[in-house]
Amino acid sequence: MTNKTIALINGANLHLLGKREPDIYGSTTLHDIEHRLTKKALEHGIKLITLQSNHEGQIVDFIGEVGLLSSSPIDGIIINPAAFTHTSVAIRDALAALNKPFIEVHLSNVHARESFRQHSYFSDKAVGVICGLGDLGYDMALDWFIAHFQ
Picture 1 (cartoon, rainbow, N blue to C red):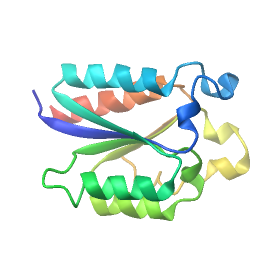
Picture 2 (tube, rainbow, N blue to C red):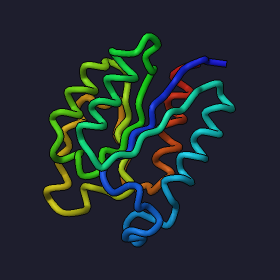
Picture 3 (cartoon, helix red, strand yellow):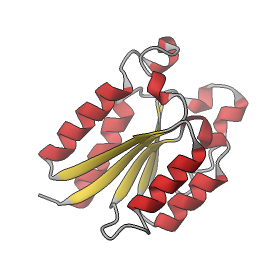
Picture 4 (tube, rainbow, N blue to C red):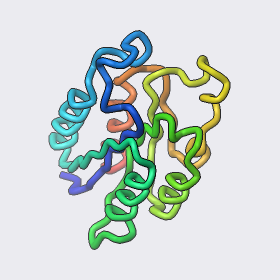
């Protein structure tokens, strides 16, 4: 048992997974992903806490609350910032202040999409970036933390 905690953070419109543009984002729902990862994390003694928000400030507040403002801060983050990837210096700053490893996940291959989607405010600070592998990317990120915590 590792007795660690990871936050799984999903940004704007990801509550629509499974319904929104399934040809790009797949048919798996966010609830399915959260359930699968929570179960897998628990099997390895890791607590997974989740947040999905369409509001940048709520994500910033959450990172602070589970990080620097917490008496027992989280040990890492898996984040799919969604559209905030290309716009949010505030979330980047919150992650930098946390000073814990995080992995950036994207369902689609952002490098094969519109040019504005090819810039990330997070990638240079992330331990790793996983994109284009659908919801399997979340599992890969969790696998990294499982190995990292051992």
